[in-house]
Length: 81
Image (cartoon, rainbow, N blue to C red; front, side, top):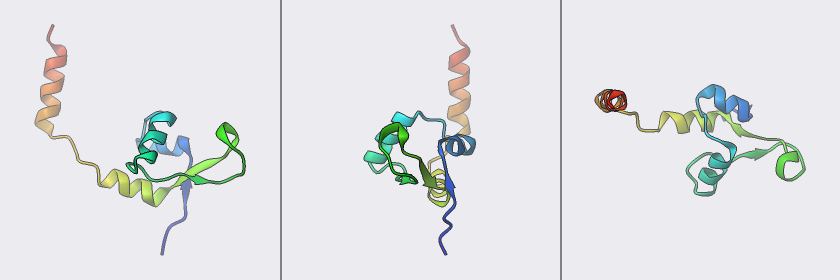
């Protein structure tokens, strides 16, 4: 059975999706992020939108993880002047 829990933009941020609204919209258009659900009539900033929590969680679970060595290399390189 599908879970119909909806998260708003703030909910995305709490889940760790810290991209801008514009970047999320670009990813949605390219089918690289779950599609939004319109919760109220209106257009632009007046419309209330959200995303299915289950779809966002699946998206996050299927992202490749960074390797520990590459993270250490990045932090080492960032400290050198």
